[in-house]
Image 1 (cartoon, rainbow, N blue to C red):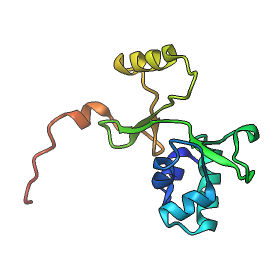
Image 2 (cartoon, helix red, strand yellow):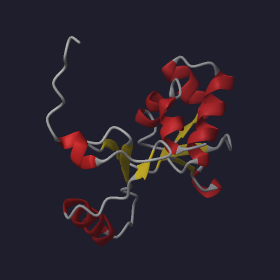
Image 3 (tube, helix red, strand yellow):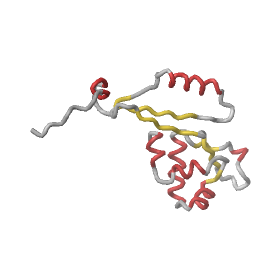
Image 4 (tube, rainbow, N blue to C red):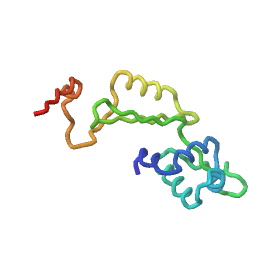
Length: 139
């Protein structure tokens, strides 16, 4: 599953918002009023795309339930001016992450070196898109 799809699923954003600190799936289900089976599925999807991580067993509470914590404090989606092109950025701020990696990503973005991918088979002529739209006639 793609990260953007996982983020769009029902309850995913609520789960990410509630996992600033390590939290069990049972506690998430109770506090967010999410059915337990759905909560387990969403947590699994978010772990699979790298937005949540299980804490090591040594840090888990006495019940030995797995605890989950989000791996990012910010997720951004930005669309390019041409409708058929998009770019998205996910900024990870994990404990111990070297800030220079985030700085170089920000520099690349400011210099226009953002990775983009066409959503359809061919990209339109960008010059035509930036021009004034053609005048409509009633013929």
